[in-house]
Image (tube, rainbow, N blue to C red; front, side, top):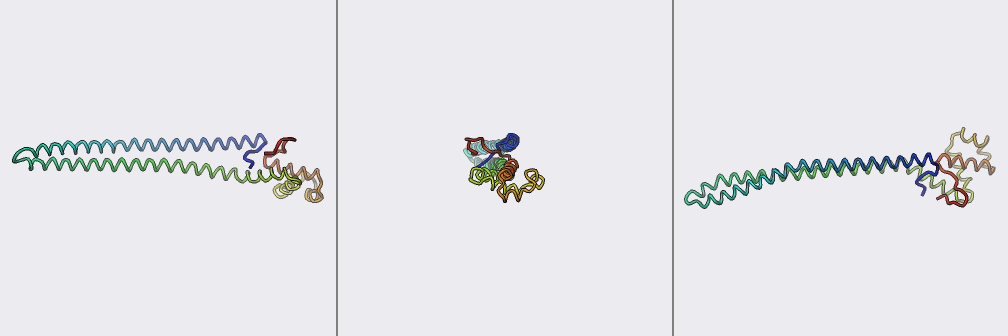
Length: 207
């Protein structure tokens, strides 16, 4: 599989594009982490409320227990402390619910941003590069086949503008049909140039 061009200009552009997509993805994943961390910090208020409510509940329950030890009036004295302890329980539960919901929202936002950035980066890469990878891989394989120049020349006839074809030969179709070696090679080179590929140096594999 051919992932990068072997001509400097196109290969540099492809590498720059890949690096830009990687930086963009990393930046958005970092942003997702920051948002998640900030949401967890916001949830800290709920945890403090929960802890305060729990402490208040324990204190009121302790006072109610002590009030109950007072002879004759202990039971009646316990009621306001039990009521206050119930309020502490409500505060604790409210704080716990708030903290849990904020934490979940933070993780959801962070995961959504991170996964979305990865998805968009992959889709962009596939959209920008995959068609070229397929065409370049086919051309590289054909270049190594017997008669590969003729196949590449046919690709050039299909994909090239008339002006580009006429620059190779005044009658490129007839020349290709007649098996003109110079015209066939010229058309094959045209196709390779369109894809940002070059013929391998003698003794060096195209891969």
